[in-house]
Image 1: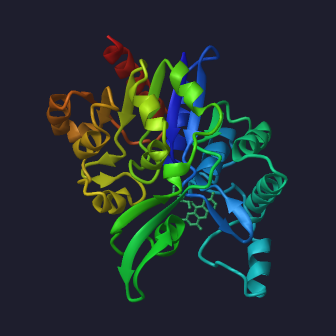
Image 2 (image 1 turned 180 degrees about the vertical axis):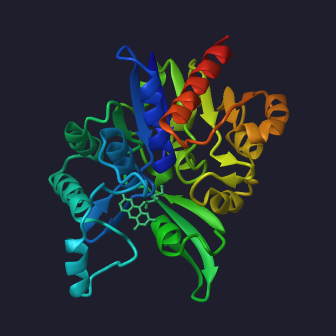
Length: 319
Ligand code: FO1
């Protein structure tokens, strides 16, 4: 079976680890990773979601943190700080620096991000084909108003430095409107037997992937069932601050509202947590098959069960 998943960072990566556990050697998983979180820092190209996917699936992730490398050390960052060079708010460890140096060198030599990602994955062997959504530069900016006035900040500044503490007034995926899907993205979607939307952020992760011209169309016109999993459980994000960015696009932080935001044009099936079983009726009334199953990825077995439930729902809606 050819499975294609659109994914952000931590939630997407953990879900995909569960998916790998329930699929076999005959299955082929292609992951289209969000690159709108990408940023240039320390003179380097940082791709947080691609790296989180690659390290998690390749066994190198810092498990508790969910991003960056396990057993990390911080000499480079401390040395930079001694020169007064930041930003201090963004934690790039020594091992992670090496990944970023390789990536930045290859990009400077003219390789597209898709080729660089493939080269990095040669080392990590994530067991999936990892494609950036686009080789073109796309950056999510967030409009905020604080004591410095109204301004747009990079998503990483909003998320990591400001901890999403101020309201997000607008989410702007700068560059998305002219970006092209990376090589292989549309082909993978066209050949998919199942398309999955993991419990990633529906606005700044999956939303930005869908904002690249051609991708939403390829998902919604695919003959493969499209099944998503809610990252909102009991009216709050399981992890992260998705509610902050959902508010900016006028969507309530509920499992049902997120399904309706994706819409029945895109989704054939939707999984909500058992605590949100009352969402099943309204979601089904909107023309999306919906089931309530446990959606907390608190163990490998629970995560694998979620992945299995998503594949089962895909089979049911295939009809
Ligand atoms: N998240 C943080 O909360 N603090 C950090 O200092 C931080 C550094 C970082 C470095 C590399 C990387 O690949 C990811 C990193 N993240 C950090 C995670 C990341 O910025 C966000 O969680 C995602 O962009 C949201 O999907």
